[in-house]
Amino acid sequence: MAQSTITLAFFRPPAALTHPGPGRPGRERPKVVPMPTVLLLRHGRSTANTSGVLAGCAPGVALDDRGREQAAALPARLAGLPLAAVVTSPLQRCRETVRPLLDTRPDLPLHTEERLGECRYGDWTGRKLSELADEPLWRTVQHHPSAAVFPGPDGESVREMSARAVAAVRDWNLRVEEEAGQGALYAVCTHGDVIKALVADALGMHLDLFQRISVDPCSVTAIRYTPLRPFLLRLGDTGDLTGLLPPPAAAEDPTEAGDAAVGGGAGAP
Image: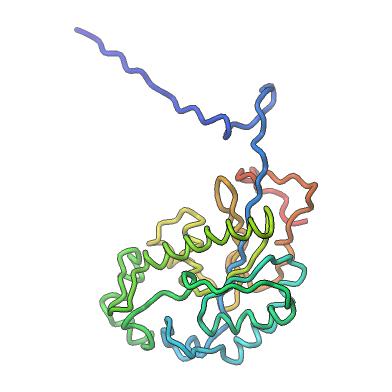
């Protein structure tokens, strides 16, 4: 009986991704190229949040009293963080959230980004969440959001919302790096579902799992981007943020090049 021979070809990683190790001279470690860290701020609590209404892109939705208190506390929470810029959704509740921060830092550049606006919920906009829970589409939004398309001529799909938000942050990463240098830190004020979609992208999660993520009003979610992968540094943080200070220039951090910290790392100094 004739015998066949199977040749196995093993993948060899490119030299640029191969790190030196004990007894392996001649292999250079990839050059550390830190990329920006983005602070994703969800807007403070709004009048729609407390009334149980899906605000969407409807105009005139302001912060409530609690939301204004949250926004007023933001400058102290971000004190000491060398922000290079603030990028905001065009909607009123986001602009009101960043106003106290900008008042304390008058030289901080402010940019408005349409792609970071709220999901376009179409005919669902302005309706009570308790009513929407009875709609057939509600279960799709909850369990299979990547298939959800909101009704009406102004509605979009969750996939479209995710794609535009991810593209916007990637574009702003490049712009902030060009204008402020490698390893810069900047803030983006946007909306809950937008932040959840950005976190899912950073973690490599399927969009159908993004409903497992929760971000409170005026919370901070921090993502540091590197040439190999993003790192989720904070998720829905409503407390102290000094641990997000960039490390001293002399400190060598392997995660800046995209390597994960084996063993978990030492954390903030």
